[in-house]
Length: 256
Image (cartoon, rainbow, N blue to C red; front, side, top):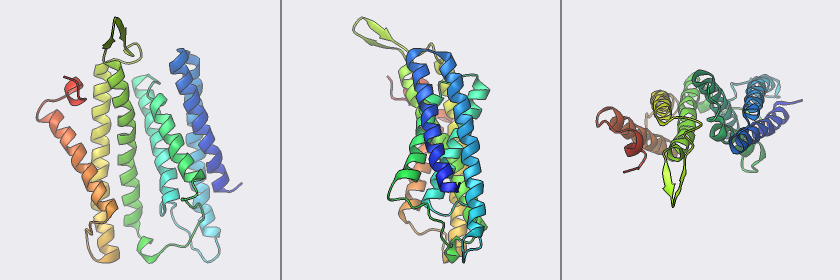
């Protein structure tokens, strides 16, 4: 079995975990949550094994001397899915709740599905360009995706928060507060944003250093650099609103 086949299988493992999480939320069967957690854990192990196997295969490719599998879109997406799954499982363990998996596991599945099944993404191992043969690139990619993964989970938590805040539709009140309480969601959301913001900052800095070593300039305003900076400013504004302006809860999520 090669790494591409293993990672393709892991795509469906994450998908199965997502099915169990969503089924548990829909039918209020906690045993399905536990099954979803164990399946997601199996996906993490398989995902990590696939990355290691691809690393080994890169040394066995004719005319290639091997590289850490973080150099192209396919490898980056595979690593992104792994970071998402690891972080949301850690959150589950710390907060003793599995509802986050309802939103986080589908993101991991969709990321892997795009990497493994999209015709626009090649899983072929190819020799690296000279500019990519840098340890700064490895540090840059790892830091960026350690920032993007908490942001992705924070997105899911924000959705949970919106639905957790009670709303009235006619005479019927609907709430998901039985699953999580809003203060916990807000605390968790802030911690994830701070964690992601820290690593995104490190990712932008290491990316600039890598760009200077590869092309002789720290910043070139290409789309990736520009959108990373825009993302940084957006989350910097969110953190500023929380810490300096005292915004939080309903106000920060757009409620009056």
